Image 1: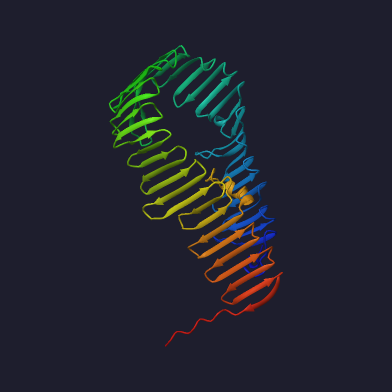
Image 2: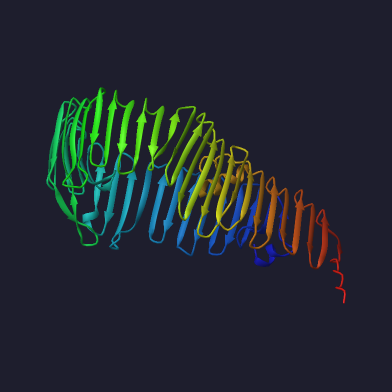
Length: 469
């Protein structure tokens, strides 16, 4: 639609068949047709169009970004500059782009069976067909993985630690910088690491603590001494489920009939805690943690930054974070049935406020004070941070939308996909009803009506009385 068309009196106003209007919360325009089944929106350098819930396409020229959703979350594409990622239900994915040293790479995954990466730098290449044979790099939380007829044999590396697994998880050998270890699980295993040093990113040398670990009849007998060579060496000894102990300069803890009855003295964080039995009954006293829990009746745990509490779990739950400049509080009833979230910047005084009452409505006010109310709200309370849900699914059930922009004074209301729509600015009011069969507009030039698309006359703008001399 042309700029002249949607800005002027000849803009399409026949919702829900077709309707175009200025955006309320941003500068730009939006065209909607066939109720919730088509939209085309432009705002600055951002533009998007789609046929919910089949697909949507969004671009942002400012950051060279693009997003494609097809029956979200069935198929998605995310692109940012040269980086891209295609994904099918979190199972099949294509991704690529440049590494930090500007070496391009392209990856293909059919999770968890096939992994492939190709690059001009052959050191970045890998292929794996699991569990038969393969080699992976920087995948599955490891720097390198090699498998052959897994679980018959598999080798992993994380930093300097290499683990060779035979008949995983029964037998492994482990080695690294000052480290050796072995296990014949669950019968017996041991590991030794000497105290070593490592240079950090600033050129300083820091100590990497050593350890001694041993188990027998895992998890019954466990014994380890960690943090050797550091200021906080720790000894742990367990014969489960009879007892477990932890001793260190910073913290002592004893558990009887693990994990139920525990006494903890945390000298570093300055609190003591008693669990009897955990996690049902907990009492903590001190600066670092203070509170009581008798689940499911009530709980209140707090320190200088956090406050977590509930009553008749999950009837009422509340969490508060006070870490300047962020102040955040969320209250919930029956987990996702009702949620009230406030995030405040204590430096600027600005606050974000969002209320969800599933499945009836979602109401939010952003940090700029812009307001939006939506009725109904089916998935938004469950996935509040998902732009794809808002773009691809929200139009289907948004029976009522209301928006206000305090910066411009603009406001809008829409019922049943613009069957009724009202837009206001400080100097103009527009209203459309029943496929545009009734239209009304008021601005400094006067008031105008249309009935069955026929102009019904114009009333002059009221004249303000002249001020008294």
